Image 1 (cartoon, one colour):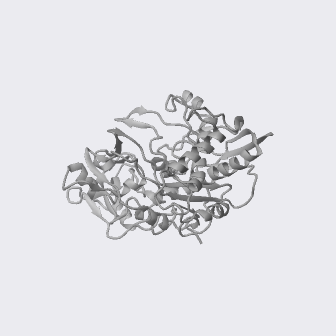
Image 2 (cartoon, rainbow, N blue to C red; image 1 turned 30 degrees about the vertical axis):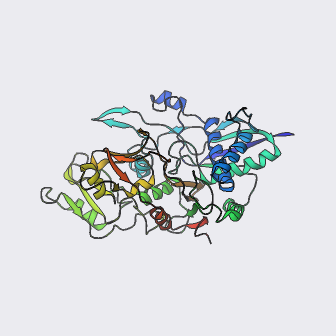
Image 3 (cartoon, rainbow, N blue to C red; image 1 turned 180 degrees about the vertical axis):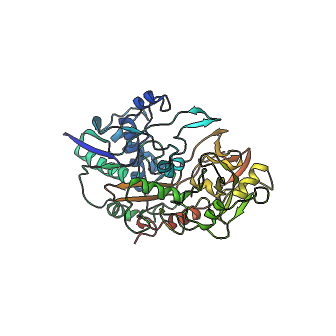
Length: 452
């Protein structure tokens, strides 16, 4: 017997959903940026695989069974006979729907938008707009989905949706904390991560090889929840996004140093003193910077930049805005600086070892004329999402950051080299670097290795 239930959801962080042309003029882009059912169902499928793949395995036998169960619930056309979906879903209501832009080059937005929203903002070339900004659905928007299904399918679907809202998101850049969703009429009140740990306990030690895709297996997935540096929750979702950004990369700021984020006497000294650019084109900082105001762990902020040391480069010049001379166009050279330089110039012998490849591909090195590092499968560029993802949860000045690390096959089997300027590069051979990044986020581990 079929039943009908309505599930209500609320947008927690800006949600970037595109239509036919999300970069059209403002009127058309806003018209196209709507809550749609199809991307929601796609996320449900993804997290169904992550949940069931941990139980069934990702070998040939496990994948065959996984496909059968997925098609029975969501439908499919693989195999000899197409399968109708066991559930019927309809988007029945959308409330508090508004648009905004969260990647503008304004101080309160650029604190997280320029980096975490890379690719979403307006692009200019010599002062001419060559690519329009994308528009986001503002936090606070609510939408309701009506599901028709048998009770047994509802039980499975509740597990999947619970996993989605606690581990994932929706839309562009949702792995970096955008597009987080809250389930406002969640039918069960148990702690999700305790439920997940208990469910997966019997599978510990039973997946000896790296899975083919991201799965919620305790041997191949780690999850932790982080508060603000004070130990209290973050006051806003914006502060939580700033902390995520700072944990990955400290932004010195193209228009001078943001003292709210960077509190370093040496940086302040550079702004106050006149430095002859001919004599001092690059500055070596002897000690790591003091922690920014917001971060996820004092031992790991600025991870993608900070090792082996902090090195500040830039130009001393005249700032037309403030009508003063100051240190302009400052940036911190990343930990891959030396190897990236060798790859660009062709110095030494390849392959060159670039650690930041581990955070997803392709990756650009803008300080080296936009050198792009990307994998190619049969000579065609492909993408590899970051194994590290972030989710923002909470409301009413009570927000937390969930950090997830999924270890799975990094690139497809076969001829899939990683290249930079036509030269071969490689990533670290193991997961030690990402494990170290995860451990440097000082939260409490709720799933996987290290859980107490």
